[in-house]
Length: 200
Image 1 (spheres, rainbow, N blue to C red):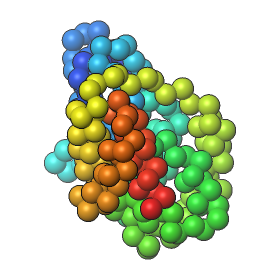
Image 2 (cartoon, rainbow, N blue to C red; image 1 turned 180 degrees about the vertical axis):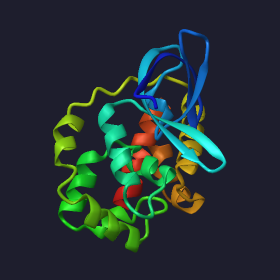
Image 3 (cartoon, rainbow, N blue to C red; image 1 turned 90 degrees about the vertical axis):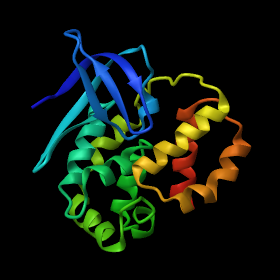
Image 4 (cartoon, rainbow, N blue to C red; image 1 turned 60 degrees about the vertical axis):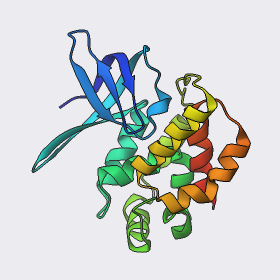
């Protein structure tokens, strides 16, 4: 069992990052938003190991609170690692906690893979269990993203959204707004896209 890994971020891709430890081992980590991390940067990444019948995977988080939320979500019937990552990708702990507290099913069903029944189950299972994460999440220190060219940044962001489980139809619906924003980093595009997808 791992608590965290510390080392060099040697690779950032739309679906994952690779963290190289001091002993030269590269750990393949699935993360909600890879562009929270920057290639060449020394980082501590909190990890959760998931063991399945035919797969052992590591899921990474920039903050311990994200890992805690991930595990709370996995405890909900119908929520798998991919859905849990999609929910926390935008760092929306406060929005999630508010939706759970207010029985807001409409907010929850906007995430990929979350239907009405699963949204109701999230509310049932997590009500009153997220309050301790809200204050911590409000002071998260997100690592700066790199500054790739705008076209490449947008394409990487769109690929990351597909990896999180959003449909091409949903992504195409907001693509015009993303293009109009004329941002320079993938991190900024992903943050805007997640905000638009949850609000739409």
